[in-house]
Amino acid sequence: MNTGDGSGDSSGNDIYFPSDVLVDILGRLPRRALARSQCVCRTWRALVTSHKLIPPLLPLRLPHYFPRRAFGGIFFSKNGFASNTSFFGPPGSERLFFPHEARVRQSCNGLLLLDDCVLNPATGRCSRLPSLKPWRRAAAEALAFDPAVSLHYDVYHLEKLAARPNQGEVPQQLEKPLSLFVYSSRTGRWESRELVPGRCAPGHLYDAVATPRKYDPTVWSSAYWRGSIYMHCHKDTLMVLRPSCGTYDMVQLPGEPGSPSCCFTLPWKSVLASYERGIHYVSINKLQLRVWMLTESTYGQLWWTLAYDVNLNPHGHMIKPRTIQQMVTWGIVGSRGGPPKDDDYDGDYYDDYNDDDDGDDDDDDDDDDEDEEEEEVNDAEQEEKQEDGGYSWSSYDQEHEDNDAYSWNSDTDNFIDIDGGAELLGLPSWGNYCRIVGFHPHKNALILIIDFAVVLYHLDTSRMQYLGEDSQLMRNPYTHACCVNGSFTYRPCYADVLLGE
Image 1 (tube, helix red, strand yellow):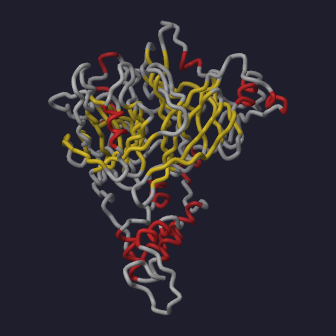
Image 2 (cartoon, helix red, strand yellow):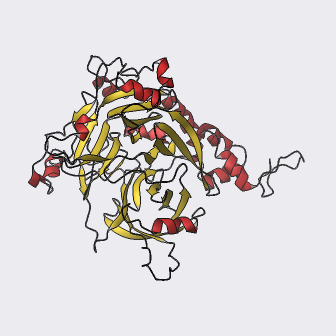
Image 3 (cartoon, rainbow, N blue to C red):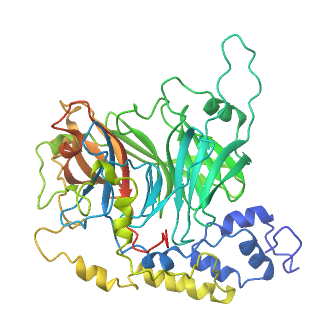
């Protein structure tokens, strides 16, 4: 087979493929087959290596940081409550380290970005962020952490984009570069960066995002996945920051235009990242659920594919009757040690936890280690064994065995049975209240709030699980001016990644 550079045999029966087409074909192969393809010829090996087609050994490294099938719960950010942050989890959940009055701004693979620090709730480790001087108002913030690639984390501070010219002025061509500040745990300081347009960065989308609305934020939310930051901007635009390449891309969001939420509610449209499945765009309109999947070609182009289009109306009718074989429900789980006092959030709250450490910091940083080329095939085979349960998290599994009636079994508990007649009914009497919480960390399932009930909807089987009431989240005995305006699914990371901080 020729690759467009003249290589290959001269039998005359070769199929000619340009190099970029061959790269696109090879990029669709499973990891094991892709690793074996390097044995075909040197040209193929060079293509696979130069284009980094073999992804990181995620399943091979992840068990060292994430317990198998771990889903700790959900962090909620709230307004008008005695606590700004609540943790919603299954019964028997381990209490985590987090200050109730701090507000969770971002979450990424077990780490939380608070107002001025990065916290690992599972270990109690906290790293203070230095002040950004001079202070700049951020259009968006993002947290990037992937223990399968590196034990370091980055915090991104995107500056406000150019404002709309005043009325009567002649609009000038807006500058296309994006300015941002990046804090890296490697260096311990903020650094200024500038990203230039990539291969898919239409100028009209930049102009739309750079034109602020009076009431809407520039960026509604952000998510990290495999080295890139995906920001859900106003004007129905997705902006993809690629810091390692120094570029950014943009693509129009599919579906009906409009704001994803108001400022004081959870969204009904959201861009979500699934660690194993990539970037998705989720939209709910009158209980009609649509899920699009983002595809990125080797040419740098972006497009959306509609993956699921489901009517949740039958499930909505069955939530009130709750035809559920209900055993246990989720609820609010307090932090370890209880809520801190008002004057404890000045560092002392975290220092108490850090004082318990034995000081044995692991100085071995494996983030720059690369696998030897001759071991790639064996690594791919080991990866398959792991997916079949090769790693036995014996200590974790033994501690969390479902051996009593009060433990939560995500595979069997609280499924909602659908009455055959429910499919013929119209919208429920309570209307079409439905909000998006997030993606399940390791299942192809969405966490939603429907009719003030927190549920888990499995996309592959179209089944729904009842988790619990949101009354503990929405209602406050002290004031009626309260709301939940942020949610972050939490997958605990037990590695002591905030070393010596």
